[in-house]
Length: 247
Image 1 (cartoon, rainbow, N blue to C red):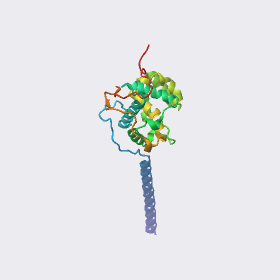
Image 2: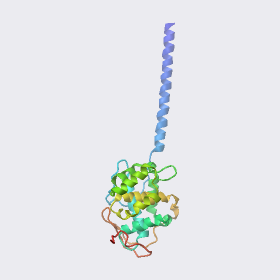
Image 3: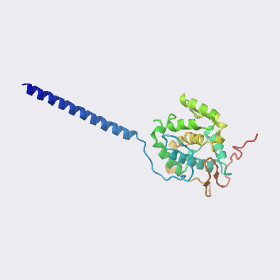
Image 4: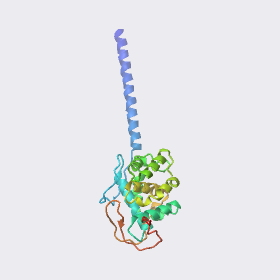
C-alpha cells in the first residue's frame, strides 16, 4: 500500500514537472517571437557617402545610416535651395524659411537615394511613434541634445523634449538664428534632416520621385561640416547672402 501511494506521488510530481516544463517552453517561444517582431529590420541599399568621415558618435544608434541620411538631405536641398553657390549654409537657410511657411514641395525635392534612405529609416522602430511621427525619446535625439554645440539652443531643445512639447512652431523661433551653423554642428544638422525632412516623406509617392531636374555637374565633398563643392546654373531666387554676417 505504501509503495502504491509512493508511486502515485512520484507520478504526480512527474506530471507536474512536465506541465511546468511545457509552460516554460511555450513562454520561451512566445518571447522569442515577440522579440523578432520588435526587432529593427535592416534595409540594404548602396551607401553613397562612405568616404566622408562620420562626425556623429552616438551609443546604441546606427550613426552610419543617420550620417548617410544627413548627407543625402544636404545634397537634396543644395539642388533645390542653392543653385548659385557652393555654400550649404544658403541651402539650409532657404530650406528652413520654406518649412516655416509650409512651402517645401517634398515630392519635388526628394531624390531616389533619399527615398531609399528614408525606407531604411522607417525600419528603425525606435525612431517612430505608431502614428509615424518622430519619437523624440529615441536614443538619437538624446545624443543630439547632449552634443549640440550651442548650449543655449541645446537647453531649449532638451526642455521641449522632456515636456513632450517639441514642435516646429515652438522650436522654429530659437532655431532660426542658429540654422546657419548646421554645416559645422553635425548633431544639429542631423536633427534638421530627421525632423524637417525625412519625417515629412511619408506622403511622398516614391514611384514619382526622379533625380532633380536641375542640370548638375560632378559633386565633391570636402571634410565634415564643409560646404559642397558644386557648380550649377541659377534657376531660382535664393538668398545668396544667407549665413553671412552683415553686422
